Image (cartoon, rainbow, N blue to C red):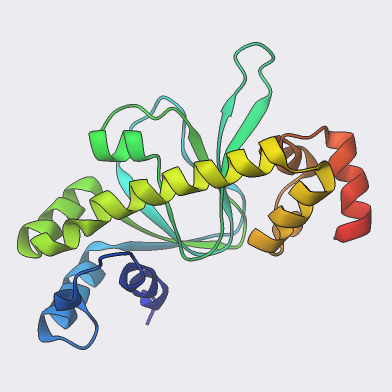
Length: 202
């Protein structure tokens, strides 16, 4: 089924309620309800899903492909990539989506990606019927804090080569989807340094 990846990710969330598991009647009803609410889209080219300063009205789940979250340096205007996502990831600006406030970041999905989405209102309608499913409202933001800590640890304590090798291990195939300047921004290295590393490790 087209939402198999989504439910695989949901079931793997820490503290996901057993009552909504795949082998329970309530779990099957939950899946059927979610399947009715989601929108499934495939992208043949890079596309911005969310602009900085706009309200994120839907949560995105990256079933296939890559995406990134970025902003612009206030002094230079250069893009700064803060988040990378690969398949089976929830792609969201937590502040914007959960508080329904303007986003501090923009979100771009790469060509060849498949995205499953549900609006904030649709998710609230599902939670009204399955309140235990609201575990997502806590689990996803916690995951984002872990992502921030992982990136900070990598960029602050690792050598340039170690950063790049760690990135490739965490995001296999990342070099095929993002330009050198995007990767350089994410690992906090000069573009020339990343270009040199790519020759030896890609």
